[in-house]
Length: 114
Length: 113
Image (tube, rainbow over all chains, first blue to last red; front, side):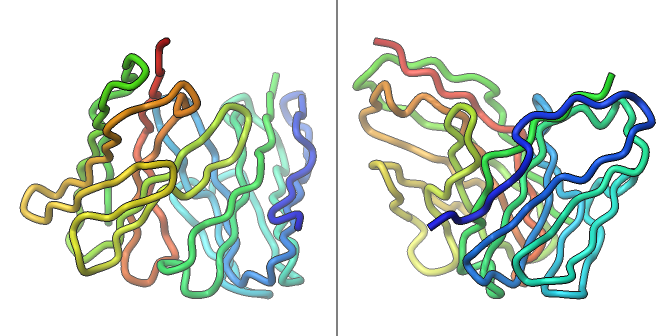
């Protein structure tokens, strides 16, 4: 019972490099989302998806792209990394009625951009 | 839009003492309320949630929270804490569509022996 799996756990990038943070869930959840966690700011929503083929922006979407080609996977792409994107990134999923179904979180990806 | 305030960034408390972590929210619409806990190097786990009904909700690990609509608060309490409760605690709200969770900045609870 894997739940939500994020890879990699750690990543160091140089300014301007690109990379994809992977997120997969095996609970057949329709709703998936990406958050970034910064000290003193809690979790801020980057992008979310309510099903395959449907994505929408959250509070802090700039600099990030997402796609949802399958129910299981929701990758987050950084096209040109910037030091301001240094953060811990969490992927989360829930069933369609998410108010009654809690968010299930992955263990996070710690990204450092130099 | 919703917002969440957690006034205490850090709360140190001795083992077996009671604790209250404060959460206040702001919203122009009805909301659902949640408390999540984050242990070191892990993702967040749901502690408890308020959807409707009784304003006192009980969660896992002996935690409970009380919803106060007039004060727009959802404070978390535990009558006797353990060392293992040391973690960061996040209050969160979502609108009734449940698709846009807004989290507070977190309160770091440190339980001292």
